[in-house]
Length: 164
Image (cartoon, rainbow, N blue to C red; front, top):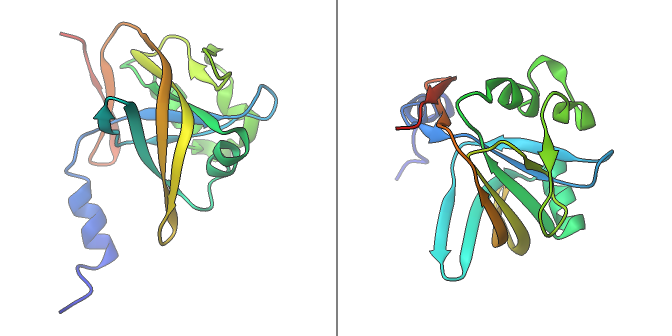
């Protein structure tokens, strides 16, 4: 039995997936932190749950643990600049990643993108540590449905998907 394909081949194969881009964010204004995730799993609609795998080194994971809540904002077709900032392109860090976008809050106070196609305000349900990352399971406490298409990540770049 082998350990599987090499890391570069595995990443190249994963690039064939077209994943919806979302922001997972936590913290209060002045100390917010967030990152881009390209997979969303909802393991249950009753209760309403969302799941993401986040690097164990990510400041966002520490903020989620500290705050006990997080915001999940689905990025729309016009949000590539937001995606670039939250992904840290150009060396942008910390609160500066939130500039240039309109942020709001629902029940928990977690940061949510005001003009997103959908936002989910979550409380932390469980953390499942694994090698190098942690699976974060959140219970959706409130949501808002917006308008517009989606922003996808495919083959190393962002791709707008207009609304039907």
